[in-house]
Picture 1 (tube, rainbow, N blue to C red):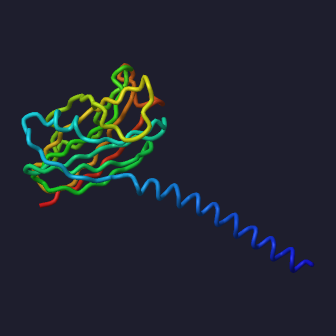
Picture 2 (picture 1 turned 45 degrees about the vertical axis):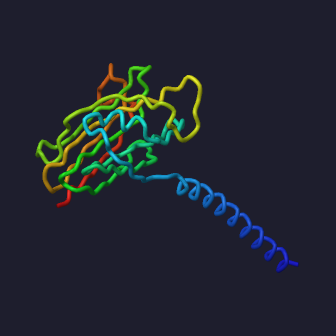
Length: 195
């Protein structure tokens, strides 16, 4: 009798582990199904904003997550990588030293929040040369909610030499940019420029 109960308990435990693992695999598979990289042609180099506003971006309405898009441009081709991040995550990138990188971040212009660049070294390896806001005319992948704003804030960097650069992008209330702002969302970047 004890042996039968033990066998039933073991089978029951294995069944629960299987279901938990199955659910975990489903979540992981759903995240893997998300397109995280694709390339496109740049035909209007002088107006990169209009080209970027026509691309497809992933969005999440989870308060504690954001899709960060990194676009690497070289010649007439751009490659977009999209990362689902949580506050404090680190994005590590490798790129050719003679390319342009655009970090495109979801930003709601209807409130006083925006992205700022912090802790960037002044070593001229990676230089911020422009930033802008773009509207996304319907090319959104994910749950769209009425009343939400899907604008993006773009930061344009030029890599001019091989080496490493680390910096932080912070989404926060722009009227209160203190480090103690508890409502901020930070993403840390570690970029390696290669020859």
